[in-house]
Every structure is written in C-alpha cells, then in structure tokens.
Image (tube, helix red, strand yellow):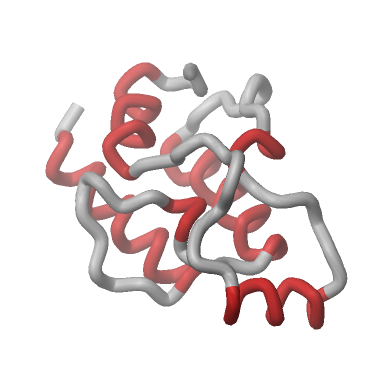
Length: 104
C-alpha cells in the first residue's frame, strides 16, 4: 500500500464529490455540510475507486437519512455539525483502504 498515493486519491475523490479541497487526516467527511445524494455518491465511488467491501457500513450511524433536496439544502446552510453521528475521518478511511473492507 502507498498511503500517500491513497491519501491523494481520497482527497481528489472528496474534492470531486463535495467540492472541498482543503482536506487533512483529521477531516470528518460526514461533517462537511453535504447533501444526502452526495454522501451516497461518495460511498459508492469510494467502494469502486479503492475496491472496498462496504457491505457492513452502517450508513445511518454516520449520515442523515435521505430527505427532500430543499430541506437538505436548508440543513446544510444552518447546521454546524452532525449531532449524534459517529465521526467518519479521512484517517479512518485510509485504514479501511489498507484493510480492504469496512470496520469500526
């Protein structure tokens, strides 16, 4: 595994899906004030880009439930962080890439 290469690929993926360029190891993916459609797309692309088995990923422990786009946009503007959700950090995703499957 080339951790620097994986980090750069993951940064590129976050930028592509969420439009966020300033990513560090501590960045919490699920605290970027994103839309549910983008979260879904990110997980799908993450799986395919890194060939990761995400079948055991508990999506709703990390992201909000899908909602109407207008409500999602309003929440995105006013919400500071996701309460009662586990952190999904870049550093953890890099460990998932190394292992090849989702783990807590």
